[in-house]
Length: 121
Length: 156
Image (cartoon, helix red, strand yellow):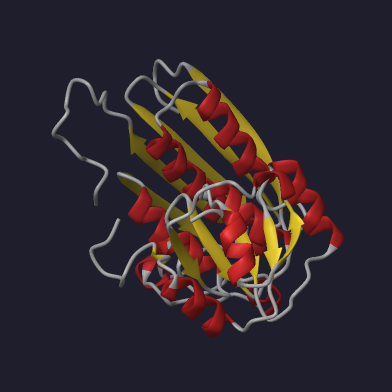
């Protein structure tokens, strides 16, 4: 699936990266704890989160995350947007809650970047 | 740090400033990419640098992160002027944290940092003195894949 399709499914607003909507995506990770994102997320995945500070973008950059989906209608600060533009990491904002966002994407074929913890990597 | 480094550089990290946290890790990631280090190694080093940076920002007054690249490995050494770690074994445990509310608000301080640094490095040594600071030395091995097509030393 492309980011454009993700945008449609989530009725999301594209805040950064309108030129990157053709990027393909297959997997996702969802968490509000960046510590856990760093521990478990895999490259080329979507990051679904309710956090909006610049560290979300930094974390996404470090992990080669394809795009950040901010849930629950969260809008990032200006500095978060600035950093995302600089690092070329798309940010989409959806009004769906994290559970609904995950469920809607999963139903359309996006899977977890890992299924469960323990022995992964 | 090690003999025969083909690249070595130290970076200063300012304590308490979440504004800039991640800058150094981003720079180190770019340098490694430019040096042609394989992507999976770059990612591991980027993660351990970022965790280190977050630790320095969260706990210390200031610190340094030193990158040294050899043909066989990427070495990262962090030194900080922080409170020190009284019980390193306890601090290494997943979920153990002494982070402040401010750190948690940023999405960190879940007690995963040191465990994560250990998980993504092939060697990790911590020395710490309470009231003085902490030093962490980490190595990520960079085995030539062509010579060892079946080896996956990174899957720890």
